[in-house]
Length: 168
Image (cartoon, rainbow, N blue to C red; front, side):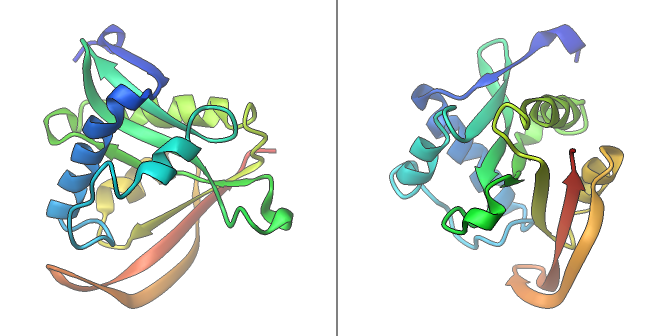
C-alpha cells in the first residue's frame, strides 16, 4: 500500500458503522475485553463524545474505505486531576493489517494530542495482543502496569497491560 493512499481525518457520523464493524472484528479475533458485538446505537454517546471538540476519533481513509481508526479519549473524565491525561485505542480492519495503517494513525494521534491538551497518553490492552504491544513500543510507550489473569476471553485467561507515554 502506498503511503499517499491513506488519508487520516476526523471521523464523521457517516463513518460510525465502519468504526463499529472494525471494532467487532477485534472482538471476533479475541483481542478485546468485549466478548460480544456492539452496535452504533449501543455506543452512540461514546461516538458523539469524540466529535473533535474535546476528544476525537481519527480514521484512516483509503479510497473512501475506512481501514482503521484511533481515538484520543478522556481518562477518568470526571476526575479533574487527570484532565491532561488521555487514553488511546486503535483498531485496524483485517484487510489492512501489517500495511502501515496503525503506524500512520499512531503518528497522527501523537501529533494531535497537544491540540486536545493531552500531556500523557495511556493505552489499555489485553496482554495477548502482541501486535498492539509492538506498535506502542515502536512509538516509545512504556509498560506502566500489568494485571495478570484478570480477563477471560475465548482463548482462555489473560491479563491486561497499561502502556503510557508522557508527551511533555
